[in-house]
Image 1 (cartoon, rainbow, N blue to C red):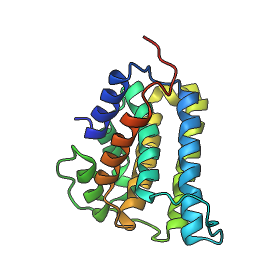
Image 2: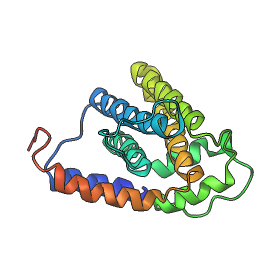
Image 3: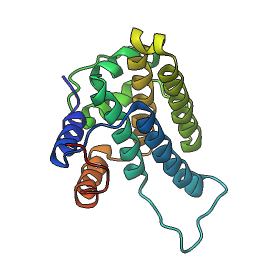
Image 4: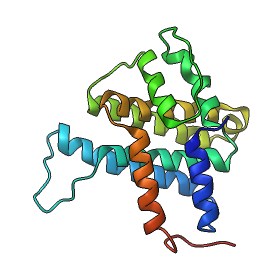
Length: 195
């Protein structure tokens, strides 16, 4: 069963009469959103402090934007995010059971049963960047793309992103809902429409 966020994204595209972007456009969007996340994390936990005029962004919103781009790819390629998570879960597990995963909240709850290597936000962000690079490599290599390795890369990126929210005690479901509300108000007519 697809995660509820997949249904949210599908509804957003249909409501706005948008077509899903190409894999290269989605990867570019993913890069843009993860860059904004990196910038925010670096200003809070790293050496680059914001200037007074710079906008402070919610980390949960930035994580939601990364998930939105990832979900666009999953939906456009018929990848079930729950399946992607379950595919990679053995790599991260402490051996605890899975239970039902239908919502982002269910997925975030699962993070407590996983071995999360880092708790430092900058190191966790590095993992997101690494997983995004591996995802890009699979997109470049058509043979891996067709053998299902793309589902595993999507799963790794999903775990890395949700784990950061978990460790930072961010209610990712709430952040997701807030960003979807913003998206509906802001994005009407923002992207090229294809009927």
